Image 1 (cartoon, rainbow, N blue to C red):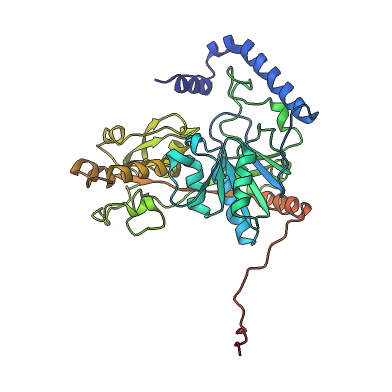
Image 2: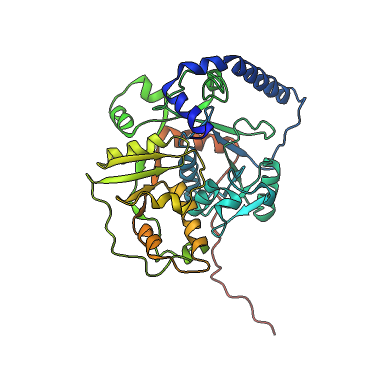
Length: 389
């Protein structure tokens, strides 16, 4: 078991031995405070992008639903005909190849798994780099007509100035022992939430139960929840919008049936908070055998072969990396029977972030205050050019 997994599990059960690390947390908190103040006072330089920047982040380590939220916001803005791009540090990618633009042909080991997922779901312009200024410069050089940039994570990246800041909080997970790293899993103290735009990622049941209640809790709390979409085969030969999908063996079974509810499934997850994924599958009626891996884990096909007795279900983020593994495996030779059987047992459970109306009202207000307005879609002229004499 890795150190990361050990500490993560200790945070989840609030192990007593974590309090031995409290002096380190005090030092971490002091450094964090001094660093933030240095940027506020101008002692450390920060970058102001030529167009507005919206940062989506969290104050805790691990998943909070940030990526599905970004996908939902980008899709919403695109429907409003607002030209929006995305930047990310590209965690899990090859920083030596950054800054880099992300497109449908990008590989997760180069640009990161979350950027690949965001682009596949939104087709939005996107660039990655640990240096956010370089990411923005690269993005705008390729797409100079953008009106807004959404920064995936980067809440603590104060070298980047921002116009809008949304903090995502996983209400079900909470804040643990409310201590900073490494005693707890907070990157910044709870006071960071005061006066901030906080989006609470609630359980679906909690949100729906509060919809009919005219309470102060419901009216003052910005919320979202995840809706599970239809389960899909991890490889779908009919889809051909990326280089990875094009390498799918054409003999992959197309008549596979979705695992029946009530049946057992292996839930394999390398996201920040795997238990949420397991709970979602359980709420759908599956008997879940959970296999948690560290966030951004680099799976191997050999590891997946061990789950041979039941169907395997993964998240959309993990599916991006697993597809790339199969693509690499089929470069030289067709899949053998063992791996072909694995292909036929691999399923993806996509989720969609559903935001409360107040979230969208806040977004509309904020972008209007920044002077961002929908651009008219370009249409072909009905007139024909004059003929040359």
